[in-house]
Amino acid sequence: MSEKYEVQVSEKLGRYLVAATDIKAGETILSDKPFVLGPNSDTSLVCFNCYLPLISKFFVCKYCAVAPICPGDGCPEQLSKWHSQSECDFFRTLKLTKGLNPMTMVQNVGSLLVLRVVLKKDFDKAAFEEFMQLETHLDMRRNTCVWKFCENTAKFIRSLGVLEDIDDADFIQKICAAIDVNSFEVRGPPVPAIGCSELLRGVYLKAALMAHDCLSNTHVAINDKNILVCHASTEIRKGETIYYNYTDPLKGTKLRQQHLEVGKYFRCACKRCQDVSEIGTYMSSALCPGCKTGYISPSCEMWTCHSCNSKYERSEIEHKIQCCSEKLAIINKKDEKELEEYVKNVSLVLAPNHYLLLEAKQRLAGVLRDAINREPRPTKKMMRRKIELCKELLPVLEKISPGICRIKAITLYELHCTMVQLAKKLFDGREINGSAYLDELQNAEKHLKKSIEMLLIEPGNSPEGELCSKALEEYRALKAAITGVLLGMQSEEKTYASQTDKISPTSNVN
Image (cartoon, rainbow, N blue to C red; front, side, top):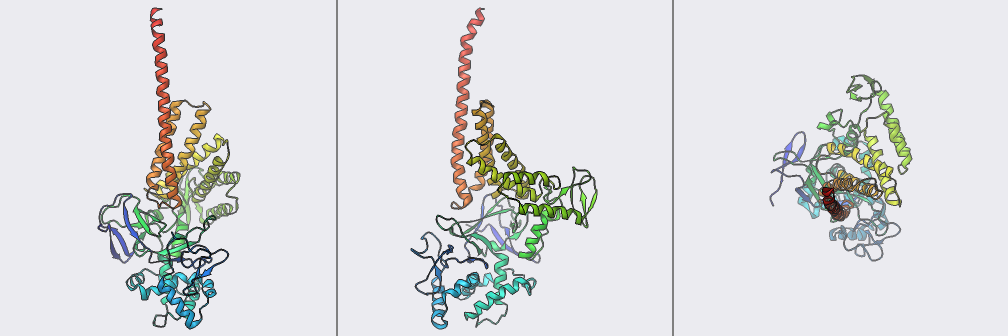
């Protein structure tokens, strides 16, 4: 299969990907194996072979007698293995020549990812050279707290004697920077029966070249074999840049910019970031204290209302927003009443789609979902409220994550669930007739179908992939229910027509 992308170079973006042909939404753009995958620098202890968390005890590799691995029967067979033969030989040599102790590796598990990159220079030279070409922003990191933190890793790796042929004093810092700037978060394998896992980082040499935009045109998923698959989330024309969003689209511009500046060392200048209204969502805006209906957004040193043009001091408005943020941080996010009270009070200060309100509404919808599924007789009020929250979130998601979007798919699924539950409750209680019941089921079917279309590209073993399997079963059940209602309505019509036929002749005689 010919590549659907090509690499170009610019002064602004460095190396980046563009579409080599027209790409439809949902099409696979690239599939990428990890150059390296491993634990974070602040991780808890994990197995060096399969990355399962080592909670209470561990064994050491019987060949090198250094690497901590899973106890008992060893690593599960289905998981990928990362303690390679070359690494095992390396540890074994250090054990014999320098007396390397397993506890030394336990104490430095956060340096394992960097060490594995260093070892690649001898065992996978071509890929290592490609890795070393990745963006590092080294000068911006120099002498920062991140630089000083990485010196601990550099010191440990030097102690292993693997840098004796390296003249570059910043060699380890460059590797740390390349990992920090270019890595993707990867779910580690969960402990059986417990479910807990460690968050890993993976460097994917092809995917690392995707440029950033807060309005991305791609959807990225990583499967259980740690393969990264990138699909087009919207249609991409030949020659257009392939973008991936490095940040959380549900955060406001200020927070997204902070995340990019701290972790990626650049300031985004995309369409959304340059628009104070955030493409009409007003996700960082507040209610105008003057006209009470317009939204105020930051403009230079003042906050200006989009409706009445009133201006307010930046410090005054930002203080209010900070108070709302601090309040959200301390409330019980599993308590329906506290969340409802927060939404009610903060809605008097912030724009309806402010990112703080969206987070509270998302959490509230989750609490209501759990309550509806838990209680034997959930109230209609709870169901209607959850439906309302989902419908408030979807238009925002359509704007900030156009096309295929994981959060949107989940929201559509949740919306369909509650619509079906509420419709059945109303129909069983004879509050709506068969025709209205059918309408509600058909509307729910549209939402579910749209959700499934997006979930189908998710890895089968991921939470979203499992949700897709569940959604497909529910789709079949919903189609059967719709057919049943239609047959019931047709039967009633036939009965009514039959009764009319019997009555009609009598009427004519009279």
